[in-house]
Image (cartoon, rainbow, N blue to C red; front, side):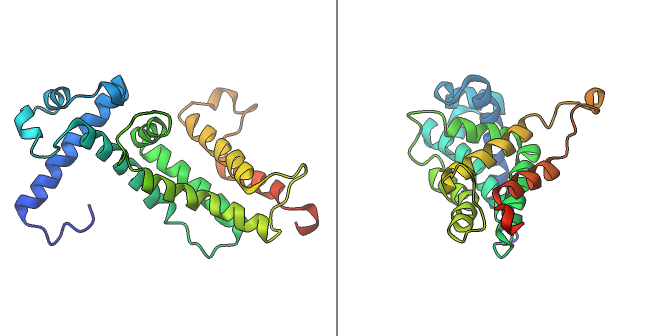
Length: 209
């Protein structure tokens, strides 16, 4: 983790323990859903006493919020690796590839994010601010590209609709990336970057290609 070098051994150990708790809680949440998670169940899975767990998280809502916030923060970190000064079509491609890298490297975090964006009644601090920031990183290039005339479509689509189409494509490729396509390689070719580049090229008016 970043910023650990200046911490005492005790503080580093506390951070490690907190992460162990979050790992156990994430596994449980993905099995039973966020509404069914309890601190007692997490304590049992992490081999902690419930009393010890309360020294890290004061409530079940605080624990669930921390899970979602951590997942959104990881996604945000992947997206921020993409330079903001790239040409807009290239930036869209690289953001899509960064999302795919995140999903492949952190499948449990990706599932947490999908839960966080599809569940009602979650704790108010469930990483929504970070999540909205990550979404802006994904959607902003589309707004800029449409405003500057770099992207266009027929029929005309809004930046939000273009972003939705691209995100759907990328998320779909993440979802099937674990499938072995070797037996149908003559019918289906798995080259996400090539597919994404072709999709983005279609958004550029033919007179500008």
